[in-house]
Image 1 (cartoon, rainbow, N blue to C red):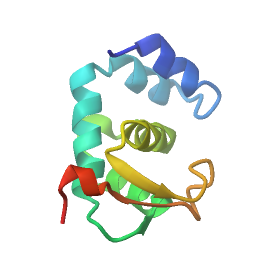
Image 2 (tube, rainbow, N blue to C red):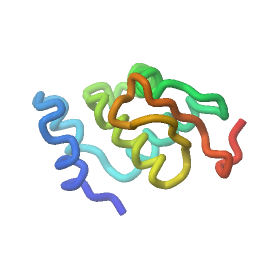
Image 3 (cartoon, rainbow, N blue to C red):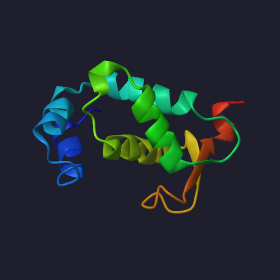
Image 4 (tube, one colour):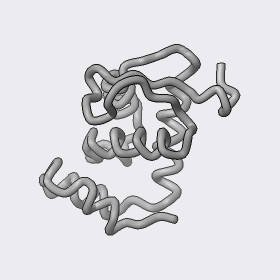
Length: 109
């Protein structure tokens, strides 16, 4: 279930620019599904640094998401990990060193 208030609360203080706040307020459940798909499509069964994935997805994201802060992509990676759609090696709070890949259960690569 999509909880816009919960999403805003999770990102509070991360990027307080008006553009980022407005972009987050515009998000719908379908947008999060698109962002999740972008993250998943950038992964395979090899380990990749989570920070590189978030940056790559941020850069490749459609223009409609240009004001979305990178922290949202990190939050979505956590959600995908919690749903066992991706595997994590390391601490997701430290995207620079944490590594992620598709879960073997997801049938990827």
